[in-house]
Image (cartoon, rainbow, N blue to C red; front, side):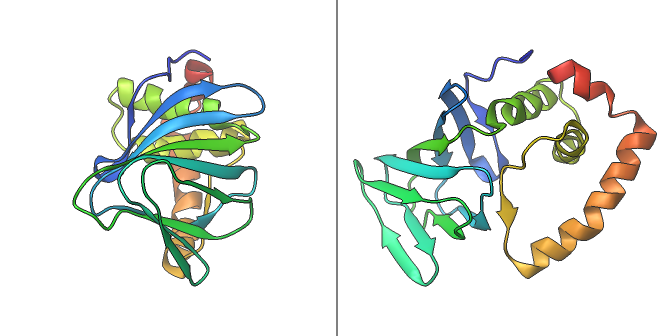
Length: 175
């Protein structure tokens, strides 16, 4: 891996990931979910998720069941189960999140951090291009109809733009 990922990696809406440990079997991050933000409904094909609440009171939604947790509590969601993580409070939530097995999380974070370090505009589109071209196991699969339709339209366009714009250079640069 060519990019140091053991640091805070910004995400959208004031959220962030900070990988703290990873090997072939586990990828562990300290994640910040900003006040009032959420991780919309999705599922993971390639790993189970385990959370330990370090700070705050997040709400996990699995099916119709809502569970609000507090510091020290744990939560588990097996792969292929749709879930949502919400922070309906006015304070940031900090979670220790483990993905087992690690899938391609370290590679994914390397590309995202590298694109951000290089101040690449439209870094998320470039990430999705690299993810597909490198054959990485995707992080998550959204379940909302609107996002699935949008993705099915944008992904072919992203792949075409990426090929025409020379985004293959990122394949060697970040791995």
